[in-house]
Length: 293
Image (tube, rainbow, N blue to C red):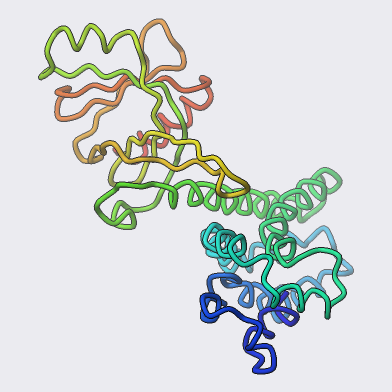
């Protein structure tokens, strides 16, 4: 992909085939693929080769390089922009000519998906190695490496949802790290409200997608998009947010093991939140508790 396509975008002999709208978009199309390539070629591969005789110790290799694996997060965050550009120009003469020269059966988009598949494969490989290496001396490192890779996958997944938030005025980066995101049933019960509104609120829940950051929790409405690939990915229209500094939590709501409460400004606003399962509820309650303490 880098030699047969990316490099060709800078090749003066090919310039006449590239449409003007595509000309300076190499970085959008390929993201930081080159960075990923160099990391594997110059660093990770050489490190791995040191463990050829001691495969059970390979967990250490992953742990030493774990910081560099963040480059995958950057790649995945750019992926929707890359996909939409590819869809616009996939049938351009330039790409067809590159593919013909390479004699590839598959078009460029299959190769652009590789880094996303690669980071998913690592967790499967580490799981397999753990299965057979439970009692080896490197088992702890393997387990820790697996946990770290799963953490990166979660961050990738969360950030893919976060970039789909629309209508938020501020800068999401100022809210601190994104800790969790997920869909819930939400009932509201506000002191200030009209009593009739309160009665209605008890019955019909709202579907809300929550994003828990270190400094705020965002309530969004999920909109399913029609289309292919990432076009089909939902977008989330921002509704409101609560500053974590003024939030309180009630962990158990009687009668339902999946419900908890988030309240605001000394119970002026109360949100009853129902998770899809008791396990999801427990994870969220733990995370919120961590933020509050």
